[in-house]
Amino acid sequence: MNIINLTVHDIIIVKNEKTEIIPPSGAVARCETQEVLIGRVNEVDIYKINYGKVTGLPPANKNTVYITSALVAQAVKEMRNDVLIPNDFVRDEKGVIIGCKSLAQV
Image (cartoon, rainbow, N blue to C red; front, side, top):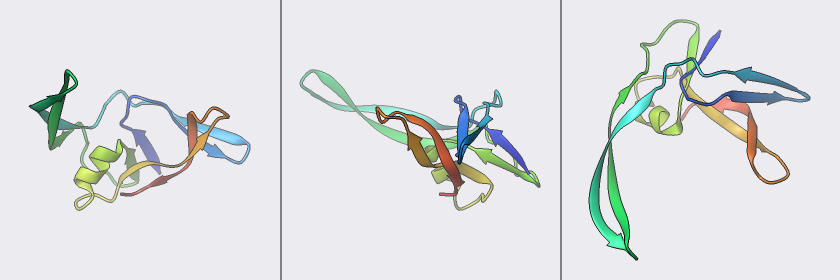
């Protein structure tokens, strides 16, 4: 099974003592966004973000799954079962995410 990383980050899968690194593919799946200024709080602009069409997600391909952001996976969950997100995060002693133990469908 091919795993294609459509994020900008290495995906590090932690399996017991071993790790598997899935590097970015160079392509990135994203949701189009539109920001609308709705106000200010303590001189900080507040925006409403409207999410639109998903871009950069290849068509489904037999024997291939795609790792994306949770936002992209959420946007296509009714149409695609080949879009996955990192799951069950592993953190270092400072609480920083250093990998994940699995992948998941949204």
